Picture 1 (spheres, rainbow, N blue to C red):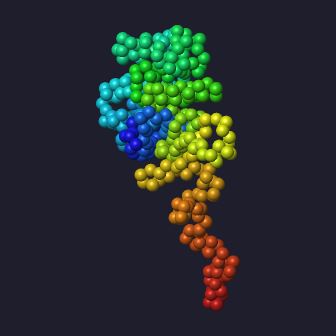
Picture 2: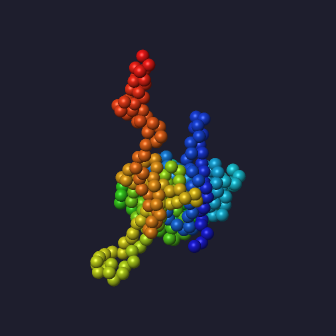
Picture 3: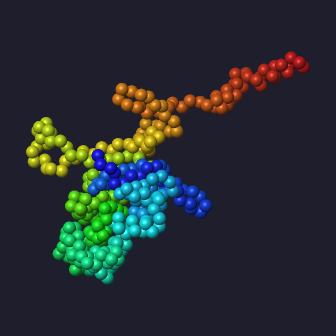
Length: 331
C-alpha cells in the first residue's frame, strides 16, 4: 500500500467557550489514500466538521499531527496555510450561495478562482473543460437563476477544482437536493476521482452514502468509532446460480467494523449496550473466536451490605433489643 495522502495521528482539538474547555477531537487517528473517495459521518457535535476544517486549513489542531501531501499543517506559518488553502484544497459547501456568485454565469464562476490566483492565460478553456466534465458543457453560459439546485452544486464542484487541487472537501453537498439529484452529484464525484485522481472527502448525514463512496468512517465523541468499506461481490458459480446472470453489475457488500485506537479503546454503539443491558461495567472473556463482552450482574457494594444489615437487625432482635434486655437486668 502506498503512503497515505492524509495522516492524522493523535489529533486533538480543544475549544474554549465562555471560559470552559470543550474537546472536539480526542486523539483521532485517520489515514486516507491518494485518490480515495470517502465519507465522514457522525451526529451533530461529533467532531466531523471540526476535522474537515482542520484538513482544509480553516482551523488549527491543538495537538497531534496532521499531514496532507507530506505537509504538516500544525507547523505551517499563517502565510503558508493561506497558500495551502488557495492551492491545495477545493471546497464545496452545502449552501450554493457560499459557493457561487449569483450575478456571474457558470463559466465566469469557475474562472473566478483562477483569476484570483493569477492564472488568467487558460482560465476560460480550463473552466469549459471542468464544466464539461461535470456534465454542464451545454449550460456554461447560464446564470445561476437559470440552473437547478443540482446543476448549481455541480458548478460548485467545478469551482472547487478550478485551481487543480489534490484534495476536495465537500460539506453536505447533497443536503438540499432530492434523492435523484443526490445520486447524480455522487456520480460526478466518482467521475472526478477516476478522471483527475483527486482525493475527495465528503461530510454527510446521508445514511445511504456508503453505497456511493469507497469507504465511510464514523466519528463519535471526537474519535474514530467505526469504518464501513464497500467491496464488490465475487460472482462465483454458486452466486450466479442463486441470483441469475442478469442480476446486474453493481453488487457490493457493506460491513461496519469498529475501530480500535492505539490504546486499545473501542466505541460500542449505545443501542448495542442497551440491548444487552451493559451499563458502567462489563466482563471481558477471551474465547476461541475473539473477545467476548458480557454484562455484569449487580453486586452489592460494602456500603450497601452494611446498610442492609443494619436495617434488618432490629427485625431479628438485634442491637436495640439486646441493649433493652441488659438494661432490664440492671434495673
